[in-house]
Length: 248
Image (cartoon, rainbow, N blue to C red):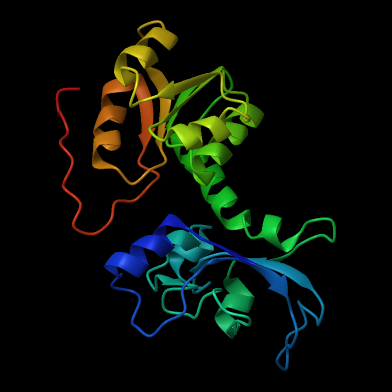
């Protein structure tokens, strides 16, 4: 199974400097090992595994400090290495030794396990934003990532979770999840609603889970004093540059 990431869509339509066609993309992967090379003793035939994106070298300063996502080789599955939109994928030695390849339990389906990579990204996003128990959090965008962020915020212990979405259909689905407040940003004044829900203080954490320059700008208007903003959703090449008020 291989889930579709927003970056896959951007690569397909706008390309990426790290992807040289022809290349198989897709990096949210789960499957079964059907063949193993000589000397591989950490995985066996029949093992059920999940595979993520970034592949660090394992030996540089960043890797040794546990910051493999900053490794200068900048390799990734579905970018320099063939991805998961295929029946089979070859996993090279570096990925086996240092990459995000992990065994999964029998009670987890491949479809579910393919979401391990975006779930890990979402958790990392909150770690970087330093989301704490009792914090108010605004999540802009109710796609798969946005909904993961909602549930993670609830599990972390956020005090108030506010979810904003333009699409009525996505917002309808999102209401099945555990946000406290749902905002239809096409029908309501987003900034006023957030300030109302946070008693005029603004949010402690704002997660922008969509590829929209306007959403990034709005995030800076609704964050509270000493709050944190995470531009989680990357912008496509050619998107307009956002405007930042340096006096905030």
